[in-house]
Length: 310
Image: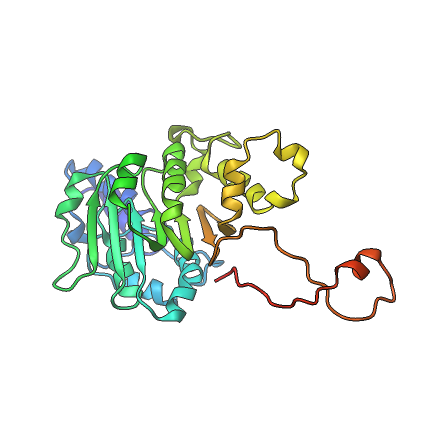
């Protein structure tokens, strides 16, 4: 065993040198010329110390992953805090939910999700790799199901999930920009009202080998920037909307409640019901010392508010 290899391992374990698990295993491959199976590395953390700006050491999700003894899961450190925040409403409700992860690799994160969410939650993993069908991810009574297929093929998605609805969808698949957009447009309708659609590893939007690039049209980042316009569709002047292909803007205006941009993660929240009209303006009170004509005309007597947000 080379001195360079021993020194590198010590540096990683002491947190002096950062390396993802994938890079670490690739390094071992380069040294020994053979593949290492995931069960050789149970409960070993190769990413060193967390960044100071990420306070995830006491979070339940971090604890589950740190103690995880099953198949390998590989996530960037900031994802743990992002997921704690995004998943919180579902944990508070304490009711079983339906989850779909697209792109599962070894299936380790499916096992983590099964531990994290309320008992009885149904967890489905989708992957194009046929070997995933043979993954052993749980014992008797496990709620994990594996489906094999291409998430970038709309016909396959429509057929496989025709009657399915999910509370959470996580796309951790190819990270090829066009594929990610195809999957989102096909699967967002499969999201339950009040659900959340998550796309991981959005930094590939800036990578040429993933058909991305800085501010490149057609990248995931640029696509979801345009959906900010969908949120504000009814405020755009009609002369402008008449000149653009606005069907998808209007469609998503009725369903998207919020778009969250994090480091490498985008999360899209769905309204708890379809929004068919622009939001109303509410003005309350009786006095207007600094008088405006529109105040006199638009004071609402109807104070019945509709709920749109989860």
